[in-house]
Length: 262
Image (tube, rainbow, N blue to C red; front, side, top):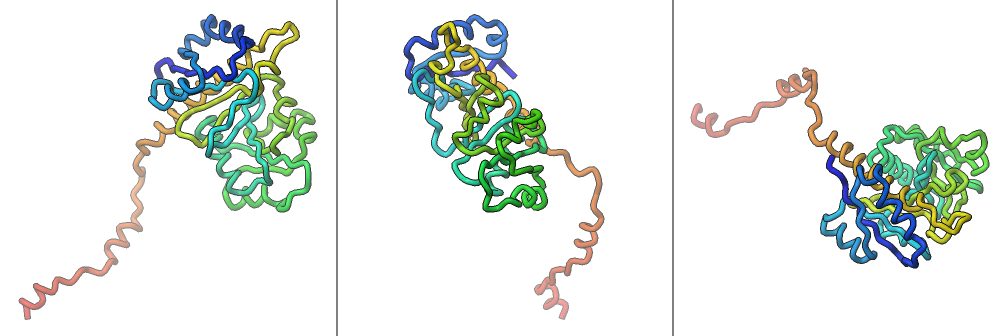
């Protein structure tokens, strides 16, 4: 795959993100993978819509970037990918999460955990989805159970309540947001650059590099996933039952020939 072009939208720019921008532009490893281009938010979306960019990164200074309509937010950590929900999860949510993990993160047959701090209306949801949908689903757990003994590493995806502190507990500042369920790839910094400043008052460069690397990985994973399914291999054996069905099928009657014969 050719070097990707990543459009980076600077949202609420107030100068705090200048240092991470300089570091990204001067990083040889980053420049080998992509060509980052910086825009205001409107211009960056236009680049994406006109297919002049392979992905969009939203880098916010003062307030978190808004989630695009109809998208599903995924929080990317070093240990697992998290899907925050404002309600108790359903089987449809788990199926959607499974599809995202497989196509966007190249995690085939993912293991999914459910985190709920209060009793669920359907405590058997995980076992039902495992049995009926064939998706490896576990829980419900509390955040404390996930954090104890590094249990997060046993799962590819974790469904969490919206507003949970689990993301930062798992990965500190090395976080990114991904807006799944869209044709285009859009990621964002997890916190604003003001919140990500180090003790020296310099914005943490990972607030920018993490969503960039996440976008690169997802573009490549999608391309590989889709290409592998464009031309499926033909069957390696012939099912003789299909031939028997054809032989046993009633033959059509030609009324014209029957009348002539009579």
